[in-house]
Amino acid sequence: YQYPLMFGLILAFCWCSLVCCSRIYMGMHSILDVIAGFLYAILILVVFHPVVDLIDNFNLTYKYAPLIIISLHLALGIFSFTLDTWSTSRGDTAQILGCGAGVACGSHINYIMGLKLDPPPDTLPLSLSSLTVTVFGKAILRLLIGVIVLLLTKVAMKKATIPLACKIFRIPHDDIRKARQRMEVELPYRYITYGMVGFSLMFIVPCLFHFIGLS
Image (cartoon, rainbow, N blue to C red; front, side, top):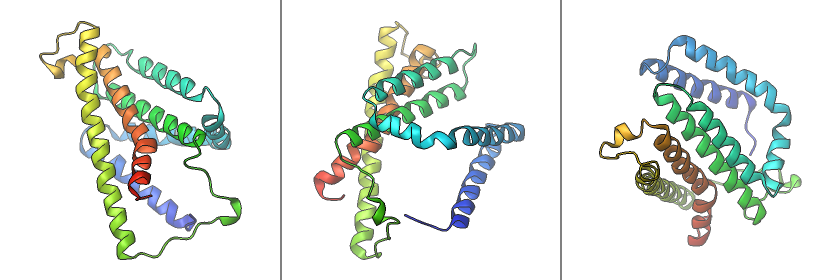
């Protein structure tokens, strides 16, 4: 789909501003943290933007891409847990990495199975469908079903991974909050749980929509 560049820039600026202001308001980050994060994001954009298509093509077409992605993201997660003291940022990092790995793996499987292919170049840009009651109703139904599936996935994986990690590493789990402050519990819980959420988002939920006729 094609939209005006200025509209995209305004939307991106407003969204980023809301996120930054919310972090400061909640006391999770200082203004200096936000400025540093903004500059770091620009640096990442400058470095990776020229090769984003190459990375995307590798993720979709290379046979061992899922294994490489999972290993790389897991290694980054382990590295982020090398801090001596527990902090919420460690869990957030593992959560982001796990979700990213799940999304990448789901995209890879979609491509390999031919489920979600790019439209032919001569059909671009795609035109938006007329907003009818049927289209609006299907959109709301897709939203509700998708959110429910993702929430159920999160709850199920959380209930499975935390006790399992505690059992494997022999960590008492009478106090779940305290147990989650251990790297051996927090990292696999966050990584696996949100990895499955990302995978469900990209593969399981679209397959469900196709099966029930909501594609």
